[in-house]
Amino acid sequence: MTYCLGILLPEGLVLAADSRSNAGVDQVARVHKLAVINKAGERVIAILSAGNLATTQSVVTSLQEALGSGDTVHDLYTARSMFEAANMLGNKMRDVVDHESRYVQPYGDPSATFLIGGQIAGENPRLFEIYSAGNFIEASDRDCFLQIGETKYGKPILDRALTMRSRLDEAAKLALLSFDATIRSNLSVGLPIDILRYETNSFSAENVATLQEHNAYWRELRQNYADGLADLIARLPSAPRNM
Image (cartoon, rainbow, N blue to C red; front, side, top):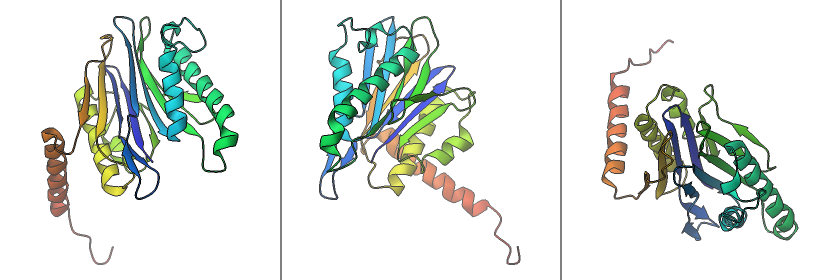
């Protein structure tokens, strides 16, 4: 299992993924689930993946190898919009699953899901979720975040605190708290966390960080949040005996 999160705001995007891959309780690996494609001054495209690891790696690697080829079906450098980029990703996933599924299905589920977000010159940042069928939905001002993988533990804090008026740094903090909740409740999600904060119209992918267990900010954030929750609960009125 995995957890990936994308947040779309007027200021830009926050995109984050954990790094744990499980093939049983004694086969735990760390893999990259966030891939960033950058063409300076023109486009930044980030792809986050969940599901069958062989499927996701095949899809992402194929798209990376097609960069600069001029292939209007697979080359993300030729996409005129993030909508076209989402279509390319969905089509590539269908190709991979169609080719591999009859060999993989006797041993497990070959399907995968993706988030793709970024900005291409001429339009605002956009964010899409690609389903296992290859079709997709887009984030909007009414639903400004999308999740894939193990989503249920990290969703409540986003529902309560994240709005389209949130600043980019505030959204990054909420994203990490969402990961903290997920990691605390599900052993199949784990560090390190790769996180990209993309500022609108910057066309730069420089603001990428990898948070390990020893990261000072990560440790402080988790501890202060836990202490704050404990203090808040202590100050709430006790439940009456006859409610």
